[in-house]
Image (cartoon, rainbow, N blue to C red; front, side, top):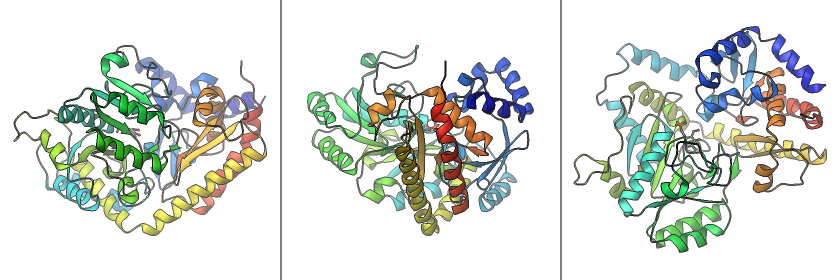
Length: 446
Ligand SMILES: Cc1ncc(COP(=O)(O)O)c(C=O)c1O
């Protein structure tokens, strides 16, 4: 009944989105240009909303419905949407033209900013997406170590490149797309975060293992924290065996302080991939790290490792928007502390509620990153493995739909808190999640 009512309200209020969705299905496979942007809704008979404007903590869809947005443009919009200072510089620089296909001084300035703030980044190369950055990082690692294998964290999302699109949404590397090489052919191994088996994997493959890549907090995989002790031990073991450690900081970079997460916790990898926040909401990717490794990509060196290219690499407006954003973030320590604290509180409160009511829902995340998982049954304090094993995609879709119906947009349940969210927004989010948690948990799906 709840499902039926929610579907009917959703559809009735969104005639324009419904029409565009029909057209989208005609011209785009699955109606989308990024898999997760269906919000999972078609599996329960709904459709995604189409957005046409955003401001601060809000998105507005083409039917005129306003949402408190927790998706924040795939975690990129930490200042909230359309922050006036960033908009202003973009407008100003638009006057000068927006794509030269040459070098700009802004790219040097952004590079300098990131390098000066993060001891692990001695040099940096810009590209257009995190997907490219992780692909290049692994290529560089293989070339630099002259070894073949790469180990990635199960559930880790590093973009859909051919190197790393394994064990996504799953802990198992055998879960991969048709068209890709087998993990064995691709030289990919997988491990579980916070599980000591990785240290055996390192020992057993040390002569052939070029790199280990992981996010210091699993983002797209579900907001799972990686213990700092685990990261520290990984650093020690990789160093011993000439294996490069790569942190994928596309989400965590500049998310919790005005620096990379590694700088904050003082665990410095060999290579780092970056994106999202450092582009201020414009397309960006970057790869940085130790000079002697990154320098191997320079056209000046013999036996250059070919990374980069890219018509839009170092895109001027991305550099400009990124610079302005970082400049603002440098003055935002208080705001970082606030959203970190409020994120932790929301996570705690939601889990406490789910647990007291024995509901098959669970919140996972770290500071301002908050994801919700819906399971097929209640499990007390479920492990990462249990969350993945008992994930109920239809229940998750209903959760997402019910949030939309109550003017909250999110993905992976919620996503993240931005500096544009106030205490009232967060109270509202908690109230709504608690309101729908029970009926969502009671719903049955055929
Ligand atoms: C940790 C991480 N790495 C890499 C990527 C890929 O970045 P992009 O979407 O810019 O290609 C993402 C994107 O969500 C990500 O979260």
